[in-house]
Length: 133
Image 1 (cartoon, rainbow, N blue to C red):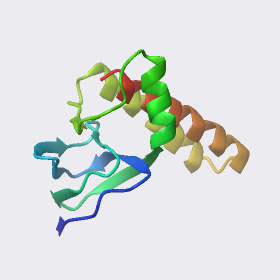
Image 2 (cartoon, rainbow, N blue to C red):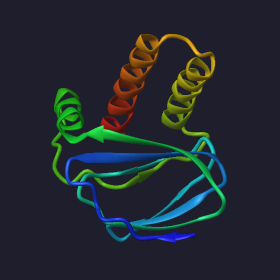
Image 3 (cartoon, rainbow, N blue to C red):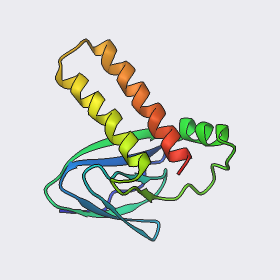
Image 4 (cartoon, rainbow, N blue to C red):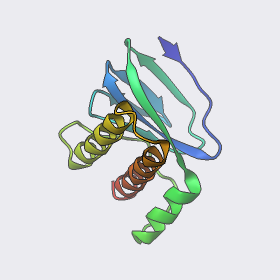
């Protein structure tokens, strides 16, 4: 499969493959997303990707929230680059664990209010991880 989506104007995107892989080209950078190895695409970044048969968690992260998190870490929010984490990287392991917990909670058919809490925790971890990369 070959796709060329336009960049999202208000949200950054995180691709987290559960199975299969995808190769992205974003802002002149080649990235590969593999199971437990997510990729992060900044706001307004047009991408091209090729993928095998893939099951993927796709998360859109508010640019306003991400910029606030980066500023809280004492860094400039301008020019956030596309990122790819190897599955062995501590940040990738953190993202994997939180996504695993969130998926387990969704699968357990608990009330929707608990799903919202896990989604917020996941977004907080992703913001922190992306800001510190």
